[in-house]
Length: 302
Image 1 (tube, rainbow, N blue to C red):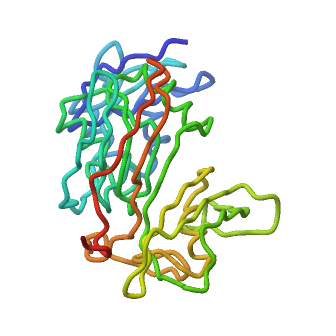
Image 2: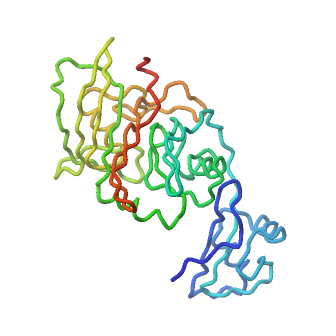
Image 3: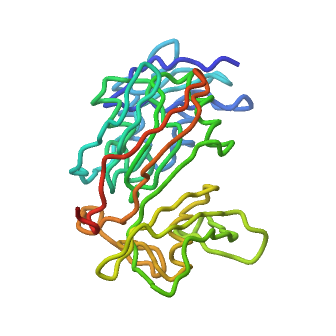
């Protein structure tokens, strides 16, 4: 089934939300369904949105009396949350007609989610670069800096996403963590990591390993080490969990080994983890491509 095209243009780099009306629905009007479905909104506020023409179908604005049509689509722009501006620029490592490789700063989420909508790499880059169809191929945690790859057009996303799904992208990270002279490196760390939805942290549990990271000490000074990390898998928080399990948790990590809260407007102590290298064979051209971050980690000046 062909994806229906939104009759609403993007707003501030954000696509309109889309709702499909249930095919077995028995509501008399679209308004009745919206009141039940968007139950977090007061009915009076939904009426205000209807009066302002904020809900639309391909036939035009939804009114208070628009009849319910099973299987139809409704689009609208959600209200934006109040957000703390992330005061760091997004670097551009590469840009062509197909790909944008960005150099994300710490504290900037990849895509809109929860409290972070406008202050995300996707929304800011769509606006800054004038690329409304820009789509992320993979993600980085909000607290991790470094390389993020986007396709310029949505139809290109699948082939590049498959590279990450099939683990054919060579990824290297850099981390700053305590230096333990007794820790034998390099080594490959393998363990089973589980992330439960209701818990913010992941944990290692007994069982068949599902996470693998190569860990190498590049240099050490003043009690700290600069580490090169090469993940063979992509479990949630894998690098952070593995370094913490070795007894050298990443500097600035508010989750491992001990969880503590930081305010969203506190940018003083970034996690010292950087997605440094992406290397892969381009699925469209067959060309071998390598990109490297221009960023450095603040705990390792110079």
